Amino acid sequence: MSDPRKALAAVDALGNLLRREIAAVEGGAFNQLVEFASEKARLTAVLEEQLSHDPEAVSKDKLRDLKVLIARDHHHLQLARQATAEMINEVSGIREKHSIAGIYGRSGAKRDNRATLMTTVDKSF
Image (cartoon, rainbow, N blue to C red; front, side, top):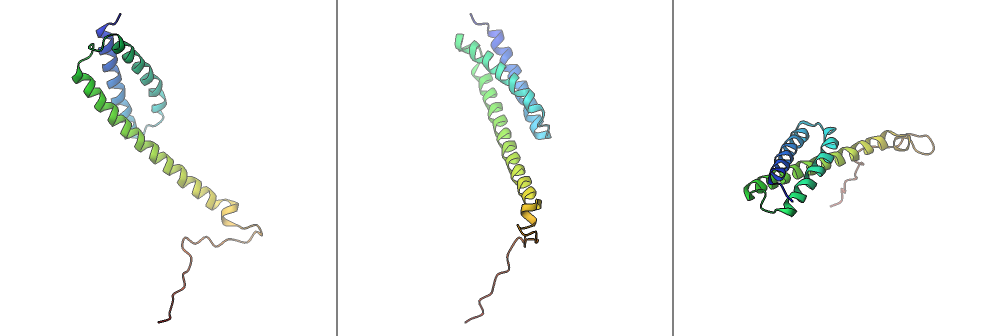
């Protein structure tokens, strides 16, 4: 048997959690995201269970508002994931450039690591 109050409480709790997660991403507090993940999963499971028993337990307006929050949270998390991947690539590139393999060749001589190679100019007409 379903309790509409549980469904409403789950929607409210999930909405609050999503707002906190969005604020954490916007504030750069990425360490909090791990804590939010398990609670988000738990609240989602509770809400799904309640709605499976009584689909009318939560108004369409409340569910629409929750959907907007979910989409906003998803967008923020995607941007954070993309920024993290870019930082990893940048750090990996810097590490490679400044490692022995990046600065010195097999013989121990310093490599030419200029960003752009000198190009020759075609002077023929």
